[in-house]
Each structure stands twice: as structure tokens, then as C-alpha cells.
Image (cartoon, rainbow, N blue to C red):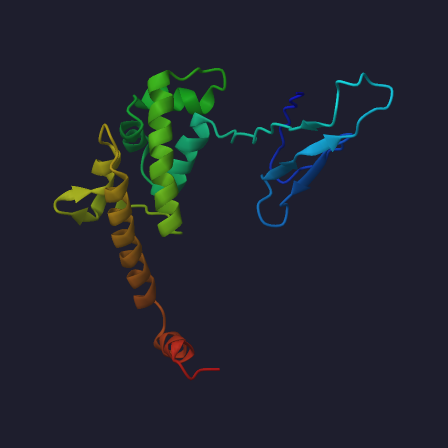
Length: 198
């Protein structure tokens, strides 16, 4: 059985293989490539023992090329905290954090890679719930005497607690934004949200 490995990049799937039928879901999930089994027709000149053979192509989905510096920058953009606090979240010194950001040849340790993966999971939850930059709320919003920053700086990040903090911060940000809107816009929005509004 012949196995072929095909790697694709995001939003770009184009190939032609003899005897293979490939279907993509480019409209819905650009990274998915479906490979269907095909049958090779028996060659009349081939030995009698060889019959129709089914070939399956094993396709490996391209992995994300997100690097540790990318995760650090993402954390900075989402959380809006200082580099000193970011270093605490990533369990490294500020100097090491700066070196990772500025020096492409700096090789992170396995511990740093594992920590970045943990932080990335938390960032995914935060960005899913709250579309805003958290900013000072990361440091000031307290639930039972603990802050989101404290949770992110733990040795093991509790993703459930990250979700709870983010939901609370998101509510506060939305309330703050609504209170700064003029009265006429709030009334118009209330009218639009009513059941009979057209």
C-alpha cells in the first residue's frame, strides 16, 4: 500500500494526483482536506495475482506555526499588562522574555514551551469570551480576593477560573461602555431590542 503525506497551508489547497480524488471544504473549514479511497483498475498486462488495489492517502493536517514570541505578543495584546507581569505569567525573568521577543535565534527551554502552551489555552478562552483588551482589569478585578493575573501566574492555570474571571471582566467592560453612551442611543437600542421592533 502506498502512503503519501500531503501538507497544506492555511487557505491554500491545490494539488493534482493521478488516481486520487481529493475533496476540500474550502468554504467552511479551509484547513480540512478530505481524501477518499480510490481503486486502481487491474492492468491486463499485470500478473494474475494482482487484483484491484485500494490506495489510501494519509494526509497530515498542517500544524499551526505559532511561536513562543507570538504567544507572548498575543498575551500582551489581550491582557494589556506590563512585561514584568508577563514574565511572571510565563514563569521567566523579564530579561529572558525580552530576549525571546528580540532574538529569533534564542531557543526556548522545554519548560518555557510547556508554559507557553498553557498560557495559550487560557488566552484562547479569554479572547473567545471577551473581544476587548482587558488592560487594568487583569490586575484589579477580584473574585474572592484573587485576580485574573494571580490565576495566570499559578504553576498550573485553572482554565475554569480563567473563564469565570473573564466573564466577570467582560460584564464590567460592557457596563462601563453602556454608561458612557448618550441617553438617546441607549433608548434607540432598547427600542430595537424590543419584540415588535422592525
